[in-house]
Amino acid sequence: MSPASLSRDLPSASRTADTLIIKAVRRGGPWLALLAATALLGAVAELLLPLALGRTIDALVSGEPGREARLLTTSLLVTFVVACDALGVLASGASGARAALWLRRRVVTHVLAVGMAMTRRFTPGELVTRAGVNVEEAGRTPEAVVTAAALLIPSAGSVVALALIDPWLAVTLVAGLGLIVAVLRAFMRGTTAASGGYQQAQGEIAARLVGALAGTRTITAARTEDQEARRVLAPLPRLRAHGLALWRLHARAGVQAAVVIPLLETAVLAVGGLRLADGHLTVGELFAAARYVVLGAGLGSAIGYAGRLARARSAAQRLTQVLAEPPMPYGSSALPPGPGTLEFRGVTVRLDGRAVLSDVYLLVPGGSCVAVVGRSGSGKSSLAAVAGRLLDPERGSVLLDGVPLSEIGRERLRRAVGYAFERPVLFGETLGEAIGGGRKPREKGEEAEVRAASEAACADAFIRRLPMGYATPVAETPMSGGEIQRVGLSRAFAQAERLLILDDAMSSLDTVTERQVGRALTGRLADRTRLVVAHRVATAAAADLVVWLDNGRVRASGTHEALWDHPDYRAAFEAAS
Image 1 (tube, rainbow, N blue to C red):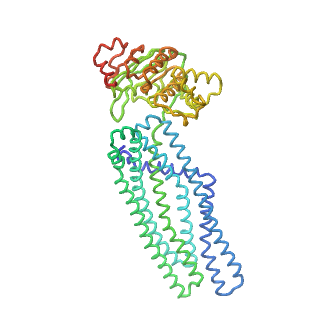
Image 2: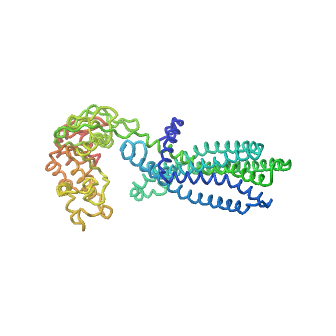
Image 3: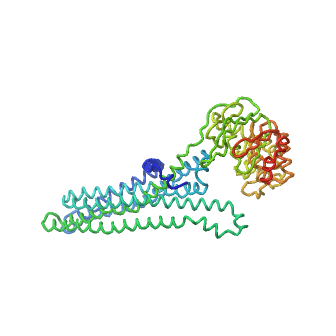
């Protein structure tokens, strides 16, 4: 995605990010309450401490009775401040972890709910960065918000306390605090912008690295490691520039605060000294004023928390971009009894502004085996994706037994349609669970279905040879590409009640195994509709009907024998071989 597209409508994006931050802060639970309580009570105790110290000094200097009690009170206040700080550190870590947990769960769940549409906008590496690093940064919000807010209490309280001691001291402090607030506002604006650029460059590097890792064999075979490293790290100068900008912002704000705060303290003490000389202040009151100006100027230490808040805000903006992608809506209609008739009515699908399917009309008879053929880029995988509603078409509709897929409930649709892919991802702890769709077979009937599906996919034999059979953990099972595909086929066979879609799902099978699976497709699996993306002549020849795609359109359909006489049809297989 271009930076311009990500920065559109910034005020609205900022408001949405702020809303997300507020929700994350609330997820801190009881730890957030403890953090707020310790920050508030600690700030109040720090506010009372200069007054207690001043009165203790006056009592010790004048020798008035009760000085021991005042000294004890001051000691208890110091102890209380230290205890609040310690509890605050614990509560800050726990509340941040809870906020990050809520954010990560929401982002990951949403990404999976949106499905293919999400990966068409964001690369996998970009999504991993946002669900990882950016969630972690946004999860630090509770500590930054509560601590920064708590710093306002000593500042406001210091103004009030100085006003009670001497109004001129309060006026001097307010003037200095105005300068500190101006420094913080400029720092927040600059840091938010620089953090956004830094996080975007991070995401680009992660996206390129994930892509490179997917092609490590090709890179190693071509001996292009150095070139690929340069390509992956191409955004590094931009990352460095944004990082330096952040450091410069911190340094500038730190220098400005380092100049303003001592000047402010000097100004208040100078005014206090004049008032002491005039007899309007006691030594203890001047000492208390000195402590209060330090507390009030402590707002300058909010630079660190303001920086965290700015980075969290920038990270939240990147998360809201992900959450803004609408999840696929599902209806509530049930499927009527039927053979699995599949119909495409004027289906158009666009990818990056280019039509990958254009105005496709197609009727797949229920219970038939249909092969989809065509050159690379002709739209075969896009047709397979909309056939089972992994993707919604931009225009047109797809119907299963007369019901639009968009009107069918999610669970009903997923039970009706089974998918197998070139590189299947196996869910579940064991092979049996992986074939059962991630669920553990609980009844003998379910176990029988899993084994029947595995037999049809030629996976049963090699699974039974494993020491634990179907109970073998997936993570501990070394499998070849063909064996993984057979497990993926088994899962699809077990799941599909009406429609089975194979998208290049037999590319890693040897010729003998492919022929055996092909016999199962035309034999024991003939009770459901089968849509097979085919690259081999044998697969197309075994199908009841062949749909020939060319540049996103149905160029022809019919039997393999009828289409074979066309040289362009034969060329589609030659290009794939």
